[in-house]
Image 1 (cartoon, rainbow, N blue to C red):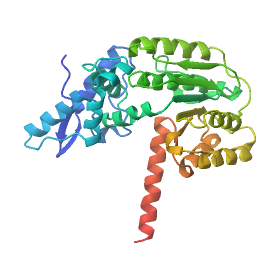
Image 2 (tube, rainbow, N blue to C red):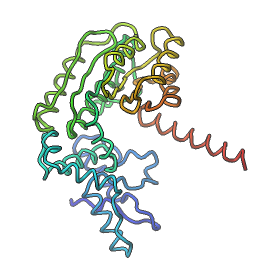
Image 3 (tube, rainbow, N blue to C red):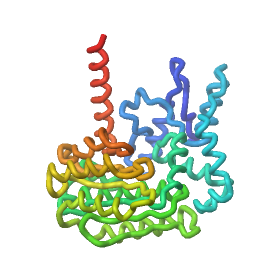
Length: 330
């Protein structure tokens, strides 16, 4: 069966085609994908189109123009990024040719429903000497998380969630230029270093995933020296531009004192725009990682990321709070 058009105009608004969603569900079901929705937008009946690649963009414009509207232009930053991605040296550093780089990255963005405008942000990763992933390997990471294994549909442990998220992030990084990826842990001395070495994304990714799987075979144990590890990372990385990603599930050793110290480090670190920190929570106990959300609100170039449902509820809460605040001034 031929795929229906992905986008249609409903009451003057471009939306995902309901027939496309039915077709996608059927494809997922027949391929063992569990029959999940064609989009992860929280309310699929209100889903607006996520334009993730040039094919999406051309299809969207075809509908708009055929309906009498003017062609929708790409954002200036997206146009500039697409041009940059076709420069021979950029393509070579990502292990691809100028003819395939935009299409291959677009296919990956489509897989994860990432807007193509974020290509610009991904290409900015070339500015960093290293992308450092700091993984909490404390004993509590063996406890249950609130995510499910995509194959078995069973609840994952927090350790499995961290492993899965790390592999997905490295999959995206495989399609963009980067200097070096380093993976380290709070307790063990293992340090995995990933470099492209001229390989195409598929060859690099196969090797990277094998190394990640190998280091995660040993289960988590120990405490949560998050403060000490972040201090060490920032001191060791002085003078360099390093993007850091901290995966954790609980309160650091030292409790409130350590949380305050981590906040101070994030608030006062040198060159915050060149040393961004992303905290990624891997737990079903939100109160245990509230300190990450507090840092996101206070420190420059710091963010906190949770699973999809929790992020949606956070957006809804913020929206309600802003609405109440606005009404208070009316």
